[in-house]
Amino acid sequence: MVLNKIRTEGPISRIELAKSNHISPSTVASAVQELIKEGYVSEIGTGISSGGRKPVLLKFNPNHQYLFAVAVTNSLVILAQMNLEGSVHRKSTHPISGLQGDALVDLLLELMDSFIGEPDDPHRCIGISVTVPGIVDDKQGIVYYNSKLRMSNVPLKQMLEDRYGLKTWLENDMNAVVLAERRFGNYPYSDLIYISIGDGLGSGILINDRIMRGVHGGAGEFGHTSVTLNGIRCECGNVGCLDSYISWIAVYSRILTAITTGRPTVISKLIGGDYGKIVPAVYLEALRQGDRLAQGINEEVAEYLGAGIVNLINLFNPRALILGGEMAIGNAELLSKVQAYIEKHAMMIVKDELVFGQSSLGEHDKLMGAAAILLQDVLGFSITD
Ligand SMILES: [Zn+2]
Image 1 (spheres, protein in one colour):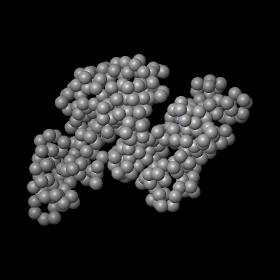
Image 2 (tube, helix red, strand yellow):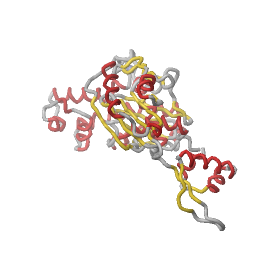
Image 3 (tube, helix red, strand yellow):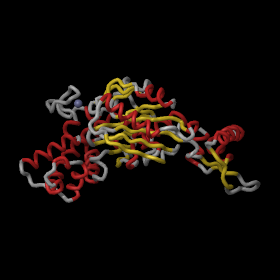
């Protein structure tokens, strides 16, 4: 706790630390002595004195140790070396190129071999943290299932610990990102929901500062909540799943149908006849140019998403709801339409004081998620109160 307070409130004096947290000065002194010896904290300059000797200020050393973060997405493997504040010091990004299952695991190991190599100061490395989409057992460190990457029952934690001799953490990507929004982002609340809309539709739920994982790590499958009883059949076995209506795959096929049936849209011009160029960035560009087709789709996405989100808000009463993913970031219209939907449809008491906004982590969101998971476990970082 002392370390955490120095990190969040520093530079701070020992006396101030004791006073503001109601701990005895001698407890603070001995904890600080240990933290300085271990290198987590250093003394800098002097603060303002209220008379008598000027107090020495204490500061957290985020570069004292480092960690390896690995984010596996449905299209990329991203590797990074990060410090204890989640800053990226070195990064490397590789396309998955359609690899699945064992072939993907082989690629991952190959990439990690060359990235991790022989760490400079192995004693300064506190471990490896990996995030993957899909259903993950964080305790046993097993990837149970991932529909797109076809990883099933992969004991990744054990594999990496045996291979590199470094303690390893494994977490679902959305769970990791919601913790990172709380820990590093603009949403320092203990009750948070993060929703990502892109090539899939997922969520991470933080309740009372704990990630909601469920019994098998399957909680938060927001994309597979039902929005209609007689709807499109989904690969999960159900019908009418939200994912089938608004994830990028659904939007992509609507755009493709419109283009091939001759509906006028600026997207035709933007892709120059190459259907492979229909990507979320092109969709966002079409929206910026006021394209009618894109606007119509966006409106429908907002309604379905809004309905799904109202369910979540009514169920969990979060303090903040964060929208991320390729289809949401930079899509101001989607955000305002969903917000209006929530305003109109959520229950009065649960929408009171609800903060609604866009992901605040930027391009390193999943890496920061991986870091947040490891740091919470090693240094208890997410708990600031
Ligand atoms: Zn489904």
